[in-house]
Length: 75
Image 1: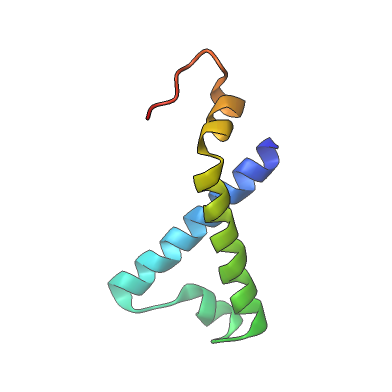
Image 2 (image 1 turned 45 degrees about the vertical axis):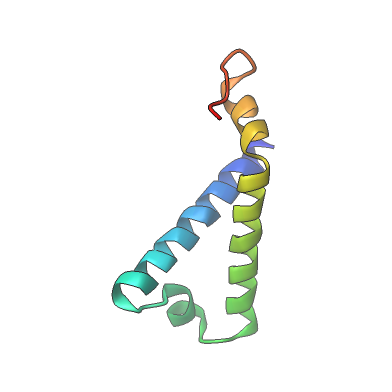
């Protein structure tokens, strides 16, 4: 499961950096690399979105896997 945790975290960072570029410079790196409105671009956006949803829904479970049960999870 830790592999999935790391993969999801990397995808969330990629998505955050892409949105940062969109907000700051109006530049969509994913679309620039893969083409605008292609099936592959949409797939990347979907996978990044699923990774973000996974991170949000599994927050406490991820914390337990990485830190352990003895450390309280911040609310």
